[in-house]
Length: 302
Image 1: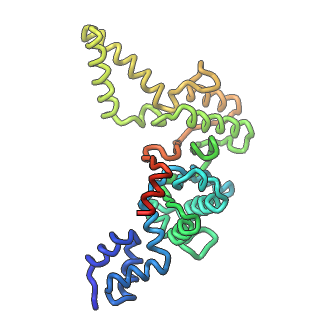
Image 2: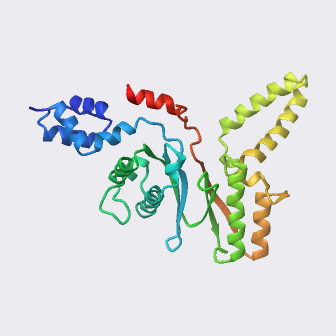
Image 3: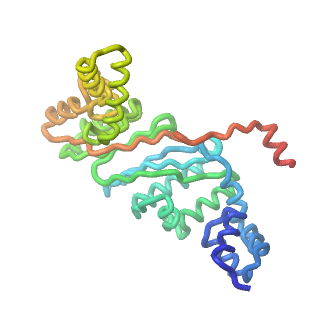
């Protein structure tokens, strides 16, 4: 009995398993849908898929740096409960993912799942599926970033916030530079900038901001020429809030991050340029499941 692409899609919808796994199962069972489901369940794949419907908003943000190759990675992997996020086996899996990203430079999470995991013959997808089955919770690799060059990472609150900052500098070997770089990473964690500098802010974002601020000023009863001046002042304040290099430095509010960077570079007799940053906060933007335990038990009995 042959099968069509539509059959593969149907099997995928019924089990939540990957396209290739569904295709293999249908090939093995000559296109028999019910038998294919059994095959997937026997392989433990459908059980993992069932759990894939559950919301994973806990987990960990993790950082890894290969000092020799000068590659940094920050990654967020989610689980359903905070308890699992503290599990050694889960953390080891996250570490393997980070090392795989450093070594193989996949472009997307999907590409990472297809990679052979660092130090293993399994793919990352197989390893993830096995973790879901053994730990009994849904898990998701949500996002990652990879930098090459001089990088510093900082993890705050046991994996609640993860930061990576990239630099161009001729001072990388100096202990004072390392202290400075750590301060900048902590600044990103604490002040949550959106952009690196003024040039990174999209022009449409600024135009929108100007529109809003102009209406605000006119609503305050200010004449147009005064409103315009007020808007320019407020835009400058906006830059100080959202741009890392414009922000007041957390350890010395009299200096901006740019001024502090210039000061350190001058003192150390070299140059420092901040080239980019990533800040991940665990579960940001993800909906958390609010079921209570009694409801969960009731739904299981049903």
